[in-house]
Length: 255
Image 1 (tube, rainbow, N blue to C red):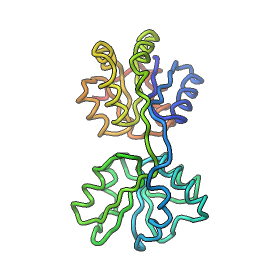
Image 2: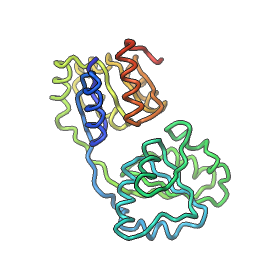
Image 3: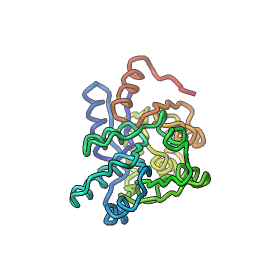
């Protein structure tokens, strides 16, 4: 097994190091870099303006990290009369590690799992602030707004795509006999499938791919992948465990 890990740094390099240490050849492909979001300077005022009992949602560890850095600079703690929801395990762990916030986690790391949480069951006059990157996911907010929830998106960070070297990277991956991909977001999957050459796309779709959610699983099917494992988590620990089991038992198609 030779694995390409497509996820932002530093998590990308951390997983690659863990895989190589476990005897699994892995190559990094951090297609994204980040900077502070345009809304970040207003975070303290935005939080203070929320009614008591409002919900603050963080869609990624990056959103928590940038938000927490700003609040620390402002000497402002997270309000104790708000509810906090993290899209995934790593986001929740990051929130707790940085600020001792015990965020609620959904049963699955996607918008459908989020909507199943009891905190969203009573939507009358509920206010929700969604901390995300520029152009982040809208399904959760759209569905909440349709049910009468007051939703505000807050750009905590900005993504910067590093796609220029993809064609040469794909050529290198083929030479390295890559047969397994880890892709942790739908945006990265789209970039991979739409940027490299048609020849490389055909090879790419013959690889086994691991994804963190059913949403990205269905997206991978749409792009033409046939060997797909849905890990139901974007944490490096879960991905490492799944790859280790695959390497020791042989690839299995999750479809």
